[in-house]
Image (cartoon, rainbow, N blue to C red; front, side, top):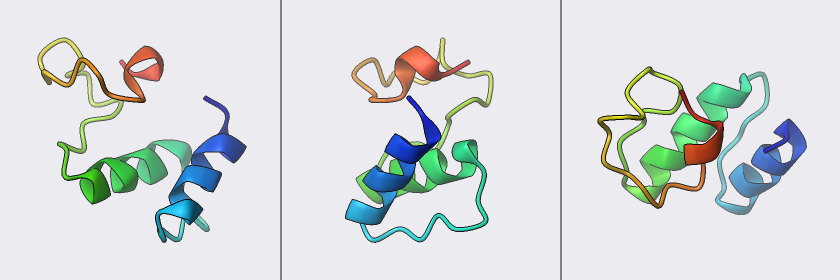
Length: 59
């Protein structure tokens, strides 16, 4: 997912993503969703969030 798309999702959720990197914004969105903020933390194979919006882009 492109950064602009991520920023739009964050904005729609009321998350201020200014001056944040893509991964930081995604983790903030994950926390807001009540999920583990594991995006790109090398735990995608063990996080258990198989329906995560970010799964295809995660490591």
